[in-house]
Amino acid sequence: MLNWKSDRKIVLGITGGIAAYKSPEIVRALVKAGCEVEVVLTEGGERFVSPMVLSTLAGRRAWRGCEFLSDDYGWRIPHISLADWADAVVVAPCTAETLANTVQGRGKELLGSILLATGAPVLLCPAMNVNMLNNAATVHNLDILRSRGYHVLDPDSGDLACGYEGKGRLPAPNVILEEMWRAICPDKSLEGKNVLVTAGPTHEYLDPVRFISNPSSGKMGLAMARAAWYRGARVTLVLGPTGISDLSGLEVVRVVSALEMRDAVMSRSAEMDYVVKAAAVGDFRPAEFSSDKIKRRGVDTMKLELVQNPDIAAALGERKRDGQVLIGFAAESSDVLANAADKIRSKRLDYIVANDIAAPGFGFGVDTNSVCLLGADGGSASFSGTKEEVAEGIWDTVLSGR
Ligand code: PMT
Image (cartoon, rainbow, N blue to C red):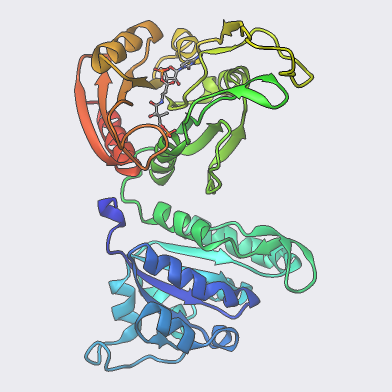
């Protein structure tokens, strides 16, 4: 667990929309992520979800709309003590009424007063009927709140409880959690920067059902992408075929082959400030693709002719513009540092992450890694831990220019 993610104190505001029925799942997700949660219901929220359910899941009482004085904190004033206690306030779901009240600074209910008093980051998760969401008043209120520094999570589109179809659904708890981490992350050193990350394997097909590939899961690349996103970057993730689905907030370009990955990367690279090549790109592809499934009957042995795929990292190195930073990864099973250092030079990278894939428990597929980051200037730094921790270490070093 990253330091800035551990033991976080979250006030979860729940307001009176039908999506409030999902709020117990949000409490569970927060608790599972190691957060302490204080639930604050508005009167409307309490009509949709019982304080009993929420307090059971949070492991402490749930606060109700009009509770302005309590002995829970030695008769301290709850709207101030909760506002000061919180590392973040998340309002999910957030109704049009609560948005309007927040714009106007109304503190009649406990949640409104907490929002007025807190200095912590606030994440608003609007959920409502599509026409209410598109109403000029709501659009205006959201613009005002964003301009005041509130974080706003865009609702999902789909079937709405009111029978309409459109935008207005409350996103899933894991999406709310990721957005909350982004709001909480203390390091905003990539604010305004464009970052492109490649992740996962490529599939090099020889017929409609067979391909050459490798065991990359995309986890290391996703960790690099998330860490950059937490720090405020706009992140494009060029992702080979993987089972990863938790990609909220990232602009995802899905590709299958090395040639598709090359096109996706090269067409976007000019506008990128940082390019991270964590993908395990297939070095070779079958020289020919059979549009029919290759039959085994009567074939005892088979020779497969392979041709080299383009080296995307090297092409990026050739057209690197001033100020752009290229970070490669090197999956090595022997002479790890020497081979990685060789790739920095041949591909004209600024950094390379030397990854010893022969070491058990690290590298392909698993959640942990142990790497050595080499700089083109000869500097080096080592990181071990979860891929999230390793990614954080890599970005810390790259961004400090070490
Ligand atoms: O995805 P995971 O399961 O989390 O596993 C993570 C990982 C082991 C895949 C990752 O940490 C890693 O090491 N990625 C690089 C794998 C690799 O392809 O290494 P390489 O030494 O073959 O390539 C060196 C660099 O050139 C890489 O940045 C690679 O993306 C790039 N390359 C390679 C070949 C090619 N045709 N084009 C490229 O751009």
